[in-house]
Length: 545
Image 1 (cartoon, helix red, strand yellow):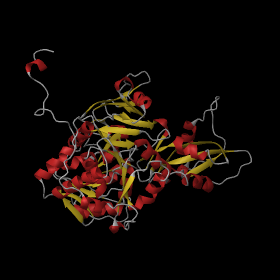
Image 2 (tube, rainbow, N blue to C red; image 1 turned 90 degrees about the horizontal axis):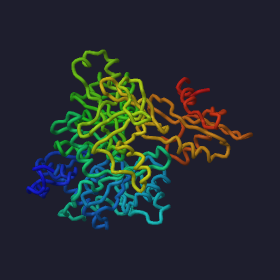
Image 3 (tube, helix red, strand yellow; image 1 turned 180 degrees about the horizontal axis):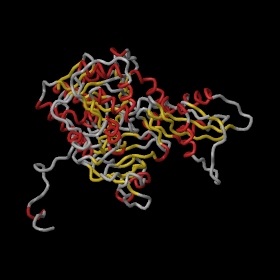
């Protein structure tokens, strides 16, 4: 061990080692900036002192309701203050935060609640019926705490304890339960079910902390940013941005409904300087018929399907600087960034700049490595052509999949997290996605499992065989397109097929078009999806004949 050994008194102790956790950011911010604006929602505003008080009361309320360290607390909320507060309040009582996608169907919400074992769920009144219907299928449903929003037209139902009433009664002197080990779980996030049932991705405090610090560097953040929460806080905990903002004494501006007018209002009225969003958000902004003027420079993160070069160029002309990032639920959100190279890149024409910006990029500073490997596990040549699987290694990689050791082992084979995404590596080392493995469809920033949609289609009496692929869409980026082979003598319309799926799955998972006819197959009967993708790409408006 050499002379720097524990035998010489160089032990870890309370003075030189504290478990890393993003919870420390809010404690620090409340001490330094108690009167500074921390959280905004419409006409409501809270300082850092008030924000920390509400977080403390939430933690106390949860503890009083029987939540113990290690328990799971779920949320079914849009981007409202209670969701932001839960990012600190739930782990501050030692619990694990499980934010659930509000766009999911009853069956999937019920599965997540059962699989994750949530003991309590914070629910916005708008989604109360969804929560109640899901809970009705469970033997041991979680306790529901209702969060009313009168201003948005969602008053309390009176059927469940109400959030603000609960906070008012909670202990403001509750002692936060901080992690003793930074490997302790802080959040449970479910994938979008890219191979059927969603998998439970477990985050630790260390990864969440390092994600916040890495983003400060990568996004070139300075003190007092004003962040508009456009990215749903149920997506990778909003890319960990809620945990990050207190580092800089910044302000979080909540946005319940994501629309172009609402975003422009926030830019003009609240002085928003930063936000993240899927390419669909960028498209909405550049195509908005009415735009309000704003004077500040605005930094935008975008992730998902690469935004069209024309969209990136138009965003820049409106006063936005767009940075393309990449990540997955399993990596706390974005861990690959398109680092802009000043000088030579600045001199390029707008189209060339946009093409460079569409690449996913290089590893974040808190990550160890991002690479592209071939089927033998060797790095592909950096030629921008040879495809392989994108793999990632670093501290902002999940602990693993809850109750799924086999899937965890497969994901972590050979010391890498295997993304399942196919890409290339350019001569400068920048990674770029070329295709999505496992037939993922990215619609409006949401992952859609073709396997799940196909499973629903096969339950229709008229369907003999089916396949679902991604079709390009100017608004959503990608939408599901179904190919259906009917049973002999069956007769069904496109509208009937779409209605069948819509009655069983969320709207974003529903095919927007259906093509009837024999499906191309290999000699062993496997459907040749690549031919269907080619057919969709070749057809106008994504509707092959």
